[in-house]
Length: 211
Ligand SMILES: [Zn+2]
Image 1: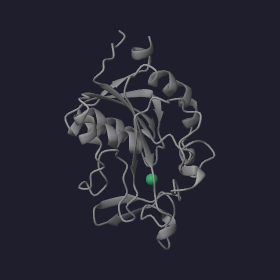
Image 2 (image 1 turned 90 degrees about the horizontal axis):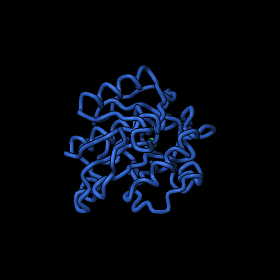
Image 3 (image 1 turned 60 degrees about the vertical axis):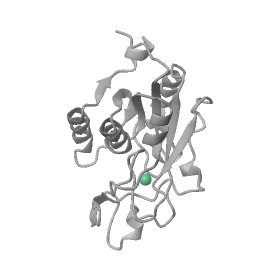
């Protein structure tokens, strides 16, 4: 059955940036393959929001900032366990730019996240300390948007956390599965899908919107 979208629906396109595409610093397999699909989906929505991972060069989530640590190791920070990443999405670099093949001129706002040096932020709603807010929930509420459809990169981190936080904020939340791709480190992809299910996030395929 095809879903009839309404003016209270919003598509949140997560982190479609060069560093998360194949060849990027933290390239996600198949990340480039979903760009045309995201463009087709976005054309169906009157409301679209983009998120952009946006770090200072000495960000705490970078393995390069922790002696003796390698990418995909974990460390314990004040706010919990942090996966360490290759340097990525450093503000002002090409890797941090949104992919130019995205064709979403009607996107209404871009939410940047991860700009605080000491705190990572997978979610488009709040940072990893689970206290610092990005303002996205207030923005969506103020605009009367009720159902949040989530696509982008990567399923097991920024997409999953964004979807769970949207649900926690009381939004009807839908993950369009084939319009996102995962990193899958240490079983993270299966875990993310289980966590989204447990949070009450609905899973659909893009054909349920595109027909
Ligand atoms: Zn990041």
